[in-house]
Image 1 (tube, rainbow, N blue to C red):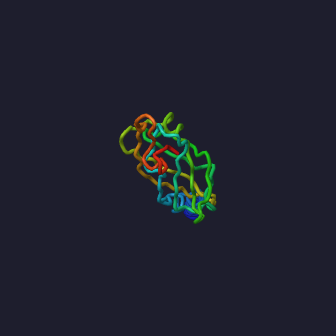
Image 2: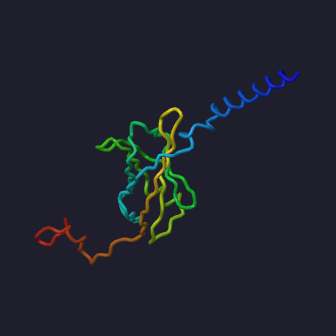
Length: 162
């Protein structure tokens, strides 16, 4: 009777051990995230501008990114999806986002810095999570010009607007 109890206890221990291993509990790579360094361009977004996109440049190699999982988390946890993702000249991920989506979907603080967080997953098995945060100044203003005047530097040598 004593041997049967030991065999059953040992069997339960073995099953529990393998369950923990295969569930990812003991796999540290699933618990760790890659820290992405991000650069938001432009670093000042004017919502009244004619520019319709802004980009986020990262240090994460594009070749390891599952682009279907890339998102931008805005203040108040709103989520934006990129309009396009591609590799820059160094082979790193660049994600472009719509400025109008940013304005319409996110609770932004105008005339102040807002924190944007880029998140995503690699295409490894199992996938690794990556995340990086950056600040961007959000403004909403049109430049004021006198009649017939353009922005400085936009006139030719005769004072005419280009």
